[in-house]
Amino acid sequence: MRAIDLGMASCHTCHEVVRLPKVKGEGSILCPRCGEEVHLRKPNSIQYTWALVIASIILYIPANVLPMMEVETFAGTQADTIISGVLYFLETGSYLIASVIFIASIIVPITKLIILIYLLITVQKKSPLRQKQRKKLYVLTEIIGKWSMVDVYVVAIMIALVHFGGMTEIKAGDGATYFLLVVIVTMIAAMQFDPKLIWDTEIQEKRKTDAGNA
Image 1: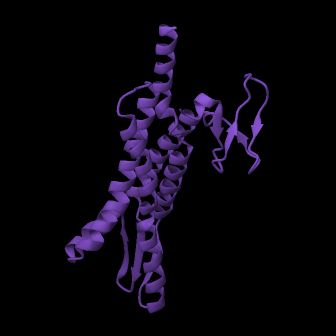
Image 2: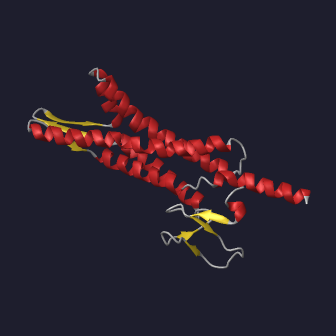
Image 3: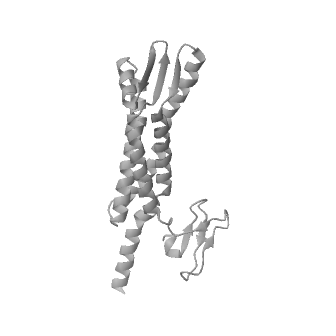
């Protein structure tokens, strides 16, 4: 028995379970714990998530094209993008650092966007297939989202350390700003998506079956 079958819903803010009014349009229900308005599903979840996903894709282009950091020495200034930085660490034999940056800056954001797009499309098509697997994919987006910040942390640490040296100066490039925006927007997109929508098709099919047997 689901909470929805009992006429109950959980608060999207604090997850308190609240009983909904039996008559639709009876008025909004406020969470007794945090005071937020309780909805059966997040309002306009699909539309907002699509908008954030598209914004992330647009921001991801300059994040890879523009330099992530700029190194200034007495010999001149060198600017590196994410890919050129990965290639530099590979050439110098720092395979572990190159792998971490490649996974955190390339694999993780792209994987997260692909998963979100897949979930949005399957929910809009009301697909009843692989619901448990899709829920696990959604949980995966929340787990791997924090690792996207690794590249930003690397730049921040290098700036602090090299500034201390005085001989060389490292500055964060415009690419770092766009990449940070990509990380933030994708995290908000994952939070905006309502995973309960994955199970709505099963509930609708059950109701149709029960109505047909009645």
